[in-house]
Amino acid sequence: MNFTDKLAKQIKLKNNPSVLGLDPKLEYIPASIKEKYFVKNVNYQKAAAECIIEFNKRLIDALYDVIPAVKPQLAYYEMYGIEGIRAFNETIGYAKEKGLLVIADGKRNDIGTTAQAYAAAYLGKTPINGTEQEAFGVDALTVNAYLGIDGVKPFIEECEKNDRGIFILVKTSNPSSGQLQDLKLQDGRTIYETMADLVNEWGSTTAGQCGYSSVGAVVGATYPKQLSELRKRMPKAWILVPGYGAQGGTAQDVAAAFDKNGLGAIINASRSLMCAYRLDAWKDKFTHEDFGKAARAEAERMRDEINRAISEF
Amino acid sequence: MNFTDKLAKQIKLKNNPSVLGLDPKLEYIPASIKEKYFVKNVNYQKAAAECIIEFNKRLIDALYDVIPAVKPQLAYYEMYGIEGIRAFNETIGYAKEKGLLVIADGKRNDIGTTAQAYAAAYLGKTPINGTEQEAFGVDALTVNAYLGIDGVKPFIEECEKNDRGIFILVKTSNPSSGQLQDLKLQDGRTIYETMADLVNEWGSTTAGQCGYSSVGAVVGATYPKQLSELRKRMPKAWILVPGYGAQGGTAQDVAAAFDKNGLGAIINASRSLMCAYRLDAWKDKFTHEDFGKAARAEAERMRDEINRAISEF
Image 1 (spheres, rainbow over the protein chains, first blue to last red):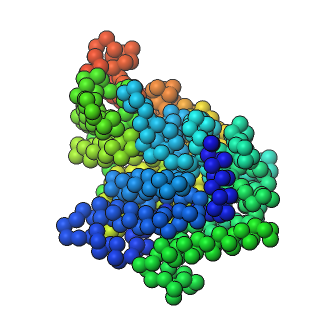
Image 2: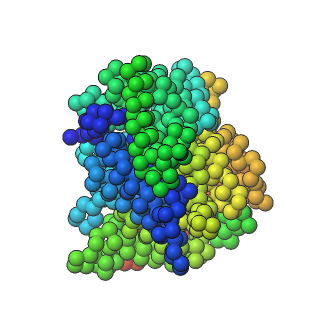
């Protein structure tokens, strides 16, 4: 089954179009875990990696039957060096074991031959001495397409060959995303609309049975008007929506990202799930040690809130 | 000394404005190295990493007194998984030991808090339990600025704090770079010109004594007309120029990237140095085993050719 149908199936199965963002800052991790690994004379990067692995695994244990996918953000692993990459690798392995789809948020990009190497690293296999070896096999990868089609094509080729997906940055959730993305071209389109049209063009040959393509888009919940317009503009693209929760996007904001069947988008929540125990709704019910239970309660609340907003949209 | 002055000093010291791109495909590595590491029952990713480490170290040994900097391309290490990252890490450590500047070509990009994590990973240190730990400390990093200033500022902050540099993608060397980058805005500028203006704006506060800023730009040698225009448009930005040699850019093409003092640009060569033994000029003089000597001969030829083209420009 190709990525886009796998994603549709998982979303329907769990009746939940949301994604657990795994951006595990050490400050999110309870003292009981840290005490276990930060012992005398330990290598600090190794201890940090062990904390992240346990924290992620326990989050996955608490959520794997509620959510369809996880989205580890590579920056938060690369910052711990090789040990951090090991934590990333163990996290994606564990998530896959638990039946979750894995979207690596790496925003990778380069010219053709180098994009091919990135595509092999995340969406395919690397040829070594007559064999093919998997580096970091994930289901999908975020991609920055500033370089144009020959920086994107190698990713699409691996998607087609190995049933994987990509999400191309169209309109990002950050405050200054408009500095470049909102500028208007002479043909009247903004740069982000132009990128959306390229997403359509590049994904035109890769539709799954669910009607969506393996070439998706990233559009921030923090720009609800653009999200609504872009849903119509890219009718075949899955929209990966960051910015819900901690960044300010609401369920009403993200409802516009879905089609009339409640498909077509996945809403990411990182901090509000990882640190659910800190939220007003849960802080009196769960301690920091119960971060998994708090995350589950918040994930169910988020699921219900988004599903309600979709049905009322 | 800040990055930009260190770079100027190294270029003057070696009288050479070129960079060794370390994109070590296994096919570039001689059989004598591969035979040593691809032994019975070996882990293939580990063997590939060992080959890359030896190949890179021998290239560095052959070139460290001729060239000012190396530019490992992260994709070619990530494709071998954790072992590949280890090879990257050993390579940058060895290059620094030999006094070379290291530019990591990762084209990283993300929103503010996540860009901060990438900046810590490559240009700073990561806070862990009251200490600060270096992940992959390099002198400079390539950055994709599609997300606007709050995705770039965390990198600039680390540059200022730790004397590092960034190179922002402006006009890339690939055939389809124009698909997005050449489109015209309503104010008459192309997208790449707009990006160049942002590079000026973002780098305005970070000039070194050499007159150049720690916020540089990437412009491909394959677009000599644009390279010449962009030199004038970004008077304070170091230009990192890929596309010389194997991609088709000539010494005459890249001469336009320099100022009247012969500073302001660094020209990358990857394949033409790593595989110099295959070039018509050297294939009868050096065997594959002598790849280091061939690389040195080609690096000296390239240096002289570029310096001549600059002086005749």
